[in-house]
Length: 247
Image 1 (tube, rainbow, N blue to C red):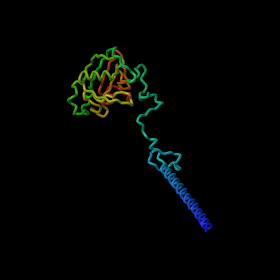
Image 2: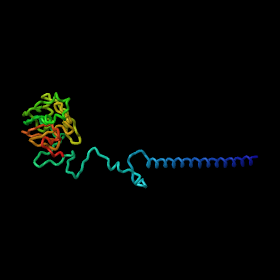
Image 3: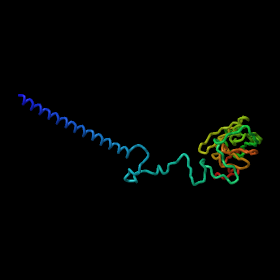
Image 4: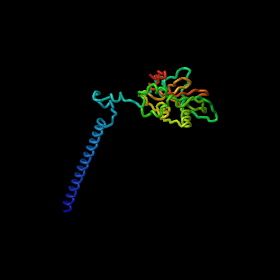
């Protein structure tokens, strides 16, 4: 009887071991299957994913990829290192004319004061009344003069923009401007409620110093003692002011 029991026990034990081995094999196979499936899904996601970037090395037929949308993509700033422009897209300054000065690098010294002359006018509008915004008739000066020529004080390190802003505030003249990081300058949108495009699609404000129209913004023009600043409204992108360098 004891030998029979021992024999059955050994048989049952062997059966149990066999069952455990079979279960282990099944679990291992299932795990491998899941890994393979995940790997296949990962490959599929990489080849047909939603990202716009296309890795050309993973494409068998290059004709199936649309590369034009990358080649023709426009950047916020177009800077050509061979164009001789500076980092703010300024063309070379004519010989003998002041180079632009970055306003963020300048410290104004209020203990050193100088004199300059400023003038603001919009007489070109009077010659282009057919294009002028009729809603602005009430703010258009009859002689085109908004700020008569006047000698004013400025301080060492100040720019054309600094003087314009202060004089407009001190004389109750409306002015609106916006910083343009691309050109590192404040852009003058309107003076005396006369804005860009109020007299045609090529109209707006331009400035000159000592008779020269700089090819950079007013925040980057650092004044010197005795400078003469003029602000003119143009109706033809400066051509009606004798300026053609913009073209």
